[in-house]
Image 1 (cartoon, rainbow, N blue to C red):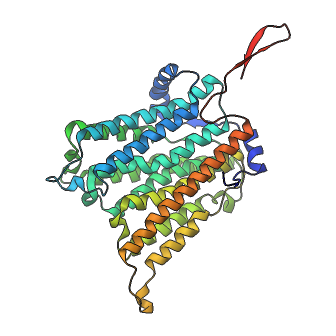
Image 2: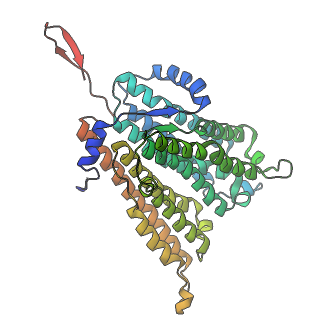
Image 3: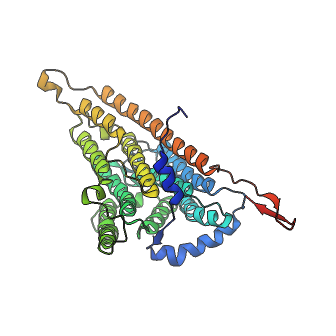
Length: 403
């Protein structure tokens, strides 16, 4: 597609050597959900490709995003009790879809092993889409609280809390060679699903009603920030330290070990500068699109890290999309009054934001499509279909089947 190659020889050779190495740290996942997924996967037809299961779950999160945005694009409905409300069935559908997407994410790997179609492509496809889903799922909950109880600046920091919890897991694998599935992931998915269902059955006003004089948003923010600090970040730091101590990890120099963090730190700094110094308070103008821009860049950064850690190659120390983002931010927040020019009009700043959404989304799609296509060609497989088994004959003339 457009003759751009994203994977070089080192990437492809690294994928050839790749062995899946994963440790599930979640009690809920190990003792409850895996048993449920083992039961569910038996009902999936063996001719269904695992990546199709993964993609179906991702599309459910996209559908939820579009559905809720249709009724509450600016996150204002919750703060207007006398205005038109989001129909309760929307939250019920969204809650069910979150759980179904979570289930599909849990069975895709099991189905791949069941059908003998496990490959590095499956893991890359799964985690790459997960990096994009992290944008959508948190945004659902913003509509429950509204922009009055949860101002846009706080939305901005919450999204980065979600990004960081996802990204550090792959940063950890980049240095240890082992994917430690986050302890809190299963609880987060259950909580999101239950919260949306409660809003559907009992009314979303529950989530704007103070509890002991404190708005629910405060509790949610506190739990989100503390959960990562307590259950995830110290464990990640310990696992990386232990891999150096026991010499079981990649043993990279310190500067190289921290290399994956540089583009994410750059994204956070640039986007926060735009939010804080925007002359037109762009995060209030269209918070949904602002989050889409940061989320798309974040997903691109994450996907490139996932490719690097799976192929055991050096990851990018910077992301090309960040240059465009930095330039756009500079144009928007530059103090034009210092050179006796009027400040940037709102329609110009908003136009720049929408342009970034389109350009970065197209670029990211092109990257994802290109990487998947190149891996399919390299491994001689198809992304969304399983090659039918063709009968062959062994040395005794007996019919056998092979893929």
